[in-house]
Image 1 (tube, rainbow over the protein chains, first blue to last red):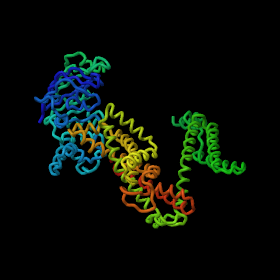
Image 2 (cartoon, rainbow over the protein chains, first blue to last red):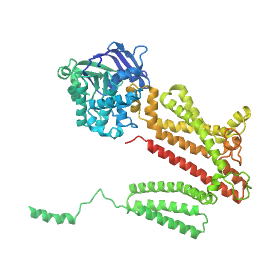
Image 3 (cartoon, each protein chain N blue to C red):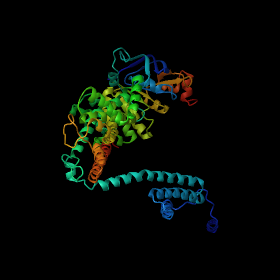
Image 4 (cartoon, rainbow over the protein chains, first blue to last red):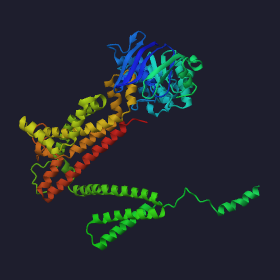
Length: 258
Length: 357
């Protein structure tokens, strides 16, 4: 199920602007890796290069290698559509499809890819909603629109939608930044459960959250506004938060800047 | 202790603190009252001054209303409130100025058109009717309008929709800019020019005869830019997050557009198409040139002259007698009703298909 991600020498551009510069790191399978760093340092951009969503943006371009086990995501002949089926994504703001019911939202990934077997679908929808800890709250109203749920429920619905297609890796771009503490806790618990099945990468601005949920933490920084973001260091979360090797990391974590 | 508190209370009541948050306000009925006063004054001045145009009375009342509001509000409430009231009043006056002609037009058409509008009028043509005498109907024109507008929609709606999808979802660079430019230019084409273009191309060069289809092509030219523009706006309103959510599920782009983007915008797109239909349903110039006009029923839009509602109105009005005037008004009423029904249907679809909450 879960795969290892091996990034080497990756730079990403918006037109001629280089947003991140020469990043290399390894993301271990069946673990949670957290990206922290000040706004604009390229965490989200880097995350989006991991499932080829960066190039959806106008002028988005990538140089370097992203190995998923032993396949290069940017190799010749690689179809971004298949990459995205393997590497799923949850966004900052909950974005259920407004024209679809809760059931259809979860089934969307499969249905839109031409999977129509009704019986299997029912099963997958139930399994995914249970996996996202949402089943008990919505099982009686699967045909109600997804946009009628609360923010936290919508975000769990989006997680259910993402895991319904059985990806190998799950990318989360600040999944709790629009949620209240209780919904955040629900999602953090969920991340803890999901890591036994998926490789999870999460971008967060909340350092306590990174400390709570992640096994490894990567700190990104940028020299100045307008300069490309760089990876400062990546290490076990415990070490990053207790005894980081780089002074900038310690300053950021202890709130001395940023 | 409690005694002092009680003793203090009357003192407070006797000298209430000056509130900085309260200001004198005009009563809530003030705007209506002022409007009534202004109306009465307007009528009075009109009668005394011997002005025969009701328009003048109305305009005098409107100016008086604005002036009275400004003066009264600034003396009672202060300048800031006066500006607020004046702005509100100006908007109301403008609203009335816009609505009065519309209401009067509808009323006039309703009253004059209802005279000969009945089942017979809707189901019979003008074939064999002596134009000086009452009788006859608009069945042939109704069929013509329905077929021509229907054909035009069949041509223009898919083309316009696909163009808009290209511009919003795919188009970057020169081609998209060129298309946008030509769509803008097309929006400004006068209907008679569209008619002349089809006339020279279809009827003179390619040597086809007059037909409803020729008219429909000209109408399609007029309709297409409207559809492109409205669809474009609607597609731009679809949040990018939805596209990304779908793409991130591994759904190909074309399927994302068909299954996520278009359904989200379908209400607005339908409304846009219906409004474009309403817009071309009233065109008479291309019909005059390309469909030629006819008093007889011709169900085949691909062969031979037809009529249409706007053409029928023009034709009957040009005859210039009492019976033909009545028929023209009745046809105008049917045309307005047709457009209104289309609008209502469009709103219904928009509401029915709108993203649910």
